[in-house]
Every structure is written in structure tokens, then in C-alpha cells.
Amino acid sequence: MRVSKSFMALAFVATIAAPATASVLGDMANDSNAGGDGLTRFSQPRGPAKLECVPYARVTSGIQIYGDAHTWWGQAKGRYATGRMPRVGAVMAVDPHNNSRLGHVATVSRIIDSRTILLSHANWSYPGQIERNVTALDVSDANDWSEVRIWYGPAHNLGTTHWPVRGFIYNARPGSLKNTDLAVTPRDIGGDRLAGLAGAKPAARAGKAARDKGDPIGRIIGDRY
View 1 (cartoon, rainbow, N blue to C red):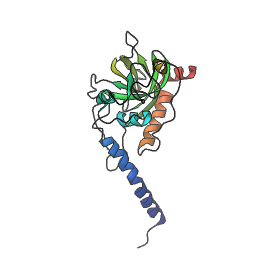
View 2: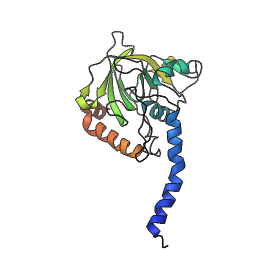
View 3: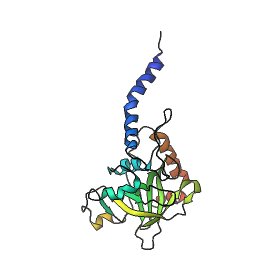
View 4: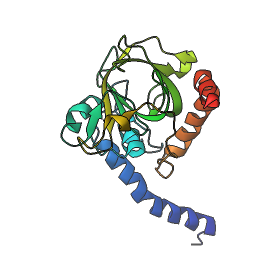
């Protein structure tokens, strides 16, 4: 039987791609739920993996915590520095609220001022998709980031919900950061570290479109700094 060269090439690509896909799915399997909607998603037999907020936050921040988003704050105790101030690269830990039974985690990608930051996160406005550099506004009375409004793509505006925030987890040892290290200063985080993950490219493109077209507040703020 004659086998075409194109068929053989496809078979070879599938063989070398399988370990990477399995690795991503295994990583996601360690997080029984990471999304804001309380649902766990695994790769379907004929579909790409969909991203949850926990694996995305872990890759973009470098903070190696696993499990449901609402457990991150407790797990960080004794392992990572934590605090009330945003810092580029830190993970904002959002407590369960309303229909979010298991909380949410998002990485700080830019600091604009004492009340405004940009976030990069997954599985928030759109199931399984990435949103990069979208606005989060501190609406707490004390300006301590205990309550925030977060950009919601379908509404093309900040969501009206005041989400309770436990605090920020920093990729640093407990006690290693001084107050001056946590000053609110406009700056940026580096590139997206998820580029090589299986199933990430379509979500990344969707996230870029949301950033470029879906968040005029974030775009206007970004143009100022």
C-alpha cells in the first residue's frame, strides 16, 4: 500500500505534539477549578485545550501554586510575599462572590496610578479565552484595593460588580520586599509566556483583539504612559 508524503508528515507532527498537549492538560488537571464561572474545562477529543485562570496566572507570574483560585491566598502563606498593593507581575487574588464560587486570579500587567491597573487573565469575560491589559479600578473607600471593578468584554465597559480582593501575591520570598518595592509606579510586564502552550494561540489572538478593540479605557490609559 502506498502512503502519501503528506500523510506521513501529519503523522510525525501529531507524534511530537502529543507530549506537549498532555503536559498542558496534566497541568490543568491539577487545578480542579480555576475559572470565574465555577467550571473546569479539559481538552475534548477533537478540540483544543481551553485556558482557565489558574494555569494562566501561574505561567505569567511564575508563582507555582496549584488548586482552586480561592485557595491561592492561603497557600501563599509562608511561601510567597503578600500585600495590599499592586505590583507588576503580582497575582491579584479575587474572593468568591456572586456566581463565582471558587474565586479568580489575575496577573498585574501594568500600573497606571493608585486607583488603576491593567490585568492579564484568562476565563473571565469569555470562557477559556485570554484577555491582556484590561482595566481594573480600585473602588474601595480606603484605596486599599479590597474592592475592584474589572473590565467585562461583552459590556464593553467596566463591570458594575464590586469584586472583593483578598490581596496581591508577589513572586518573592516572604519578608523580602520593602514598602518602597511596592510603590505604585507606572511600568510594564514582559511578553506573554503562554505562546508555546498547546491551544493557546487562538485564545491569545482573541485576547489581543479584546485588548485592541474591546477596552477603550485601557487603550486610552495605555496611550498616556
